[in-house]
Length: 344
Length: 273
Image 1 (cartoon, rainbow over the protein chains, first blue to last red):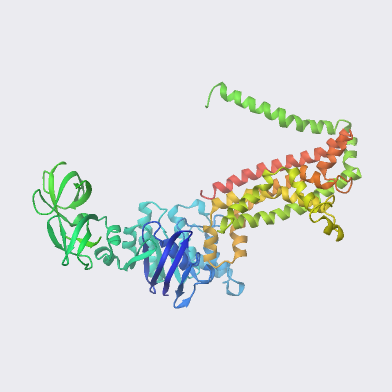
Image 2: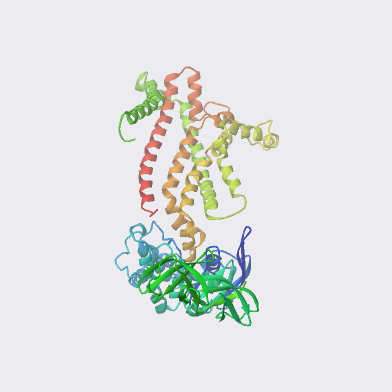
């Protein structure tokens, strides 16, 4: 199903959570809403769900206006960061809830509900835990149950609010691979919120990067990472180092060098340039490039991480083959290989 | 602070204080009540005016407690699950009966509905009597016991958050279903606890009821008022006999409350927080 929002605006008191958000999630797509806290991503998700309502703008499902419909009439599945399992119900009763609250004429028979619950317990790989209570489960198990509960009603769209946010790193990685597999098997349009760029890039078909209630860029993980549309996206993804620079004739003037701009073309003038840690060559002091002082070297496996100081600021560079014999305090030159620059 | 005499000194002080101020007076109630034997005790209770007072007290509690259950549930539901203007004002209003002297609470109703009060004349013309009659006693009791249920539920519901209700709504449940199947089961022990406290206060209230009752024997006397009248008439055995019923109610309340706390702590520990 296609989920669309049209020019959504939402304010909480004086705080503008959304300032005109237009977005489309395509049928069967796995869409990530990525942004720092306060960027409006959770508000956007809750408005899609009907748990919050916009001050203006519309939400449509397959072209049908849903703006005034409450959550219960939208046919959605919603997964909460803190699971929101019904604490006084067994796992099986939690999963069956969405089916048992249907009006009598639409409600499946008890045996059909039990069969569906069993099927879902198998799907989330917890076949023997139906009689347990949420408090008796680990975080990862609870989130699986929450997902099974949301899928039980065969939602037209699955909305997930930081679904892995409360889990530890190992469980988080396992669970997201598994979630992707569940999605690929069910083909239900899914939208999930995250502040973790790695998670978004790893999991999503397309990533929506949000900042201060606006969409900065919507594109594939590859495109938002390699062709960031705005300075914010470039800065937010990939731990880029930022430099002052000048933009002239399509080139970027930085540290005495003129380099091609890997970002979308911009007019002449002052700019800010971003260079990711792995996009530096390390050269001897006095060479053309950015003069730096080495502060620390850390050899982390295949790559060496160099912490350098440039004009009083810290710059991170990684190199597979750093010059040998470098010690803290040495002067060196950082030569950017790829630069993305945006008007300041 | 785990060893040594300060610990035992503090425990002894606390026990001495409790003994002198609570256990001793409680014992005195029963000793006095049975001072002239079992027969005198029973006589004090089955005397018609005493029975009327018991009946009236039960009646008042039977009206005030359900009213405040409904009000308390509605208020805590609104305050904890929704955002609206004036929420802080509503919370303050709920606390008002706690901060106002019960005598003042009673006087408010006399000023409103008494013969010289704002609505006094129109009520008299309509033939409705509120002050010095049962309706006044019920009103005053409802006012005084107003906060108990809500005060018990608001922190509990706040701590539980809105996630479960939102999850239920997203799964297609309507408002009543959400309340019956999600909210109510989560708060049932807290609710019972609040009802118990509310009931104890409704039956034991003296100040506010005293002002609006008029102390008409057999008609507008609740148990606490009846105790006072008997005592002022130097009828100590009967006074303490009726008082022993109230004391018994307090003890039962305390017992059930402890059982609930035990049970309640259990459910909270099981909720994963």
